[in-house]
Length: 141
Image (cartoon, helix red, strand yellow):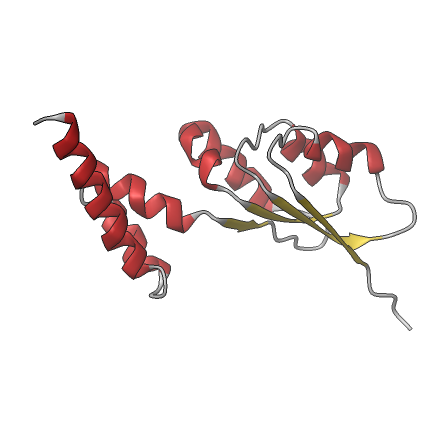
């Protein structure tokens, strides 16, 4: 197989995965298991936005993300947007990851006493970062 043929196969796989983006992520997950070429093309569409969810100040999703990225470090290249709650433990864990393809970060729950140094720690590990969004915490009345 020549390099040109391999490139055409990868382009075809990317094209196929592109059609599945509007469908459920289940289709993309299934497609990623079929072959290496389809795996890369599908993963590109599976991980563009990662949202960290907290439950009572605890963020099990950040530990899961860290575990996934440790076992499959190439996936970090596909993450373009990260939605993060402002929580010291979450930010500390995320600051240890180099998000080389990250273009946008949205911080949720911004308050006057937020750990700015931890927010900076995360953003400084994202050389492609272009957009930063701060969403204020809702005050309870």
